[in-house]
Image (cartoon, rainbow, N blue to C red; front, side, top):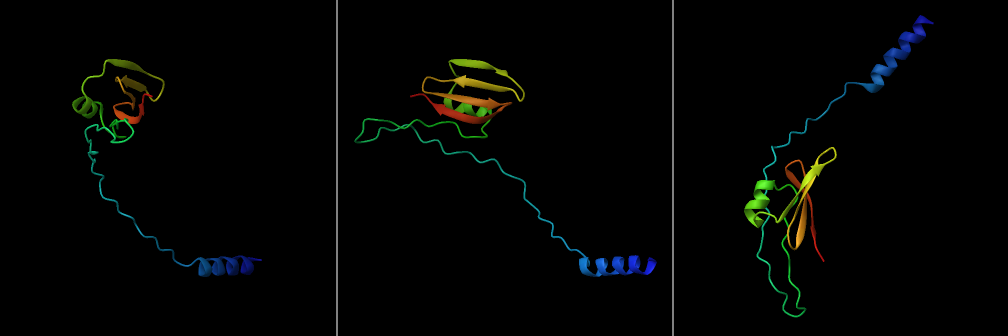
Length: 105
């Protein structure tokens, strides 16, 4: 019985063998500034493009780029979700960062 146990242990160790693992090293992320072109009219359709804040932008960046919103709705829930309502779009924030921006139709 002891011999079987030790033989099983020896075979398991031989089959499993030494394991090697690679370590994946990731560089620190650098924040990217999304390009914000000015709204421009489409030539044929009479429509225009609305530039929205990009995901991950901070409240300060949004306010700097788009100005102070006419309406700021206080945060609710956990995590706290707040929103800023502009005339043509609404920006949703989780804590201090943009999670979504919606164009008003």
